[in-house]
Amino acid sequence: MAEQAQEGTGEYIVHHLTNLKLNLHTMQIDPDATGFWVLNLDSIVFSAILGVVFLALFLFVSRKATSGQPGAWQNFVEMMVEYVDQQVSDGFQGKATFVAPMLPEPSVRTSFPVLSLTRT
Image 1: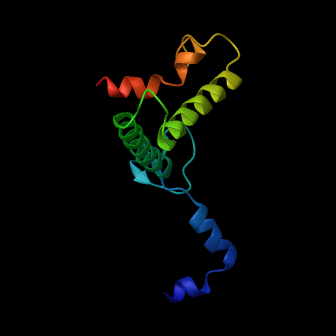
Image 2 (image 1 turned 45 degrees about the vertical axis):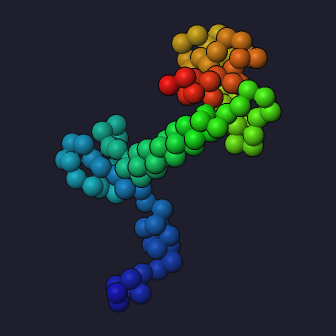
């Protein structure tokens, strides 16, 4: 406890901004590890958590989807799909048949996630 009290502000900030890294060569957690064989465990854990949250959200929305007037959550899911599709098309200028193709027709593209999840 006294050790923390003598720690300066800069060291405190650097300590809390340092990612949890796993060095695959030594199989030990090393905050100073760099290179190709280092896994950033913070990113992996939060990516998995967010993936599960969005998958659960999309599944929840697909169960309540209507073909008439869409609800607020259905609009949110469609906006997320359009956002990802726009990011892919902005970053990849070619025809996206291999890199993250959503669907060829823009009119069908917005309802694809909801329709695909309701057919399961």
